[in-house]
Length: 400
View 1: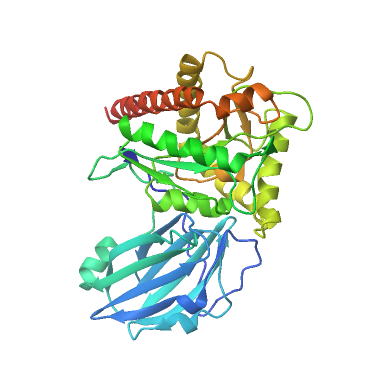
View 2: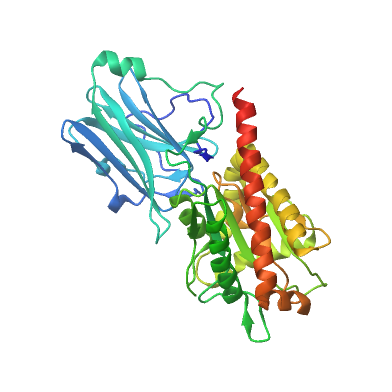
């Protein structure tokens, strides 16, 4: 399967000079962990290790006259003095800051010609933080000049599709809640336990079908924050992210399965309340999303809509078809939208499935029924298979 890696798509007028390090006055997606970041000599080259509190889209390029390495990020908060990172004899100076709304830039002035040999984002599976690692190798002045230059205004918003060498289809399953957050509760049953059970069964069904690998955001009754769930999916190179829930509605009555995709505007009041409740569970567990939510919405939503939103919509449509065929009936409005934070990965098509509502006795009975769960799982397997076929067909048409 193909998987696009998020990259920047903006004009790159150089706005940060060697002596003009400015502290950023913004609510950034991530901040730099200075203690675990460094720029060091690596033989005849240089290695940059920039530790971030959260994985963010980034890109790397070089500029000539003077020779510089530039790393752009979707907003990262830099310290006022970045010189402490520079432990290299081959780097003359380091500066960083905001250079346009929603974007941050790190600039390193080089003492000589060095070419980018490697650039990678490494995400910690347990903590959800990340390291941007760039390795520079010696080059001739001619080689450096030939490869230097900022991407232009007309550059594509994403890199071209990259096909993994193994051709695998990898799905991330996210059993909602867990640990200190049991989710909805009724009749002695916790949403967290029911979703973990279903996720385990769905994993087995997927591996028997077209899916090559399944990444689980949790495998036991433990708490995993919403940002960490997304980071775990990204670290596992997931092609799809499916969050599993079975909430309860205090106001009104609802039954049946519903599939959600991301939107700033919720389809209805009930959807908005569900999204708010999901975020509030993280706050109660000590992970405060309130300062991040507006930032995530404004900075990442545009990227999600550009490339992953149509693919997520296509998956959601297939889920409605596949699960309806297996289960017979779903919610009266099975396709809804809401601003669930767990769906805000910019680089992975993501959906949230409300398998049912524990506030409905019939839905709770279904969730407790192994036959119903097996049929629901098969509907999801069918949908992912159909999505994969359509995905490849669209890519083939685009390549013609």
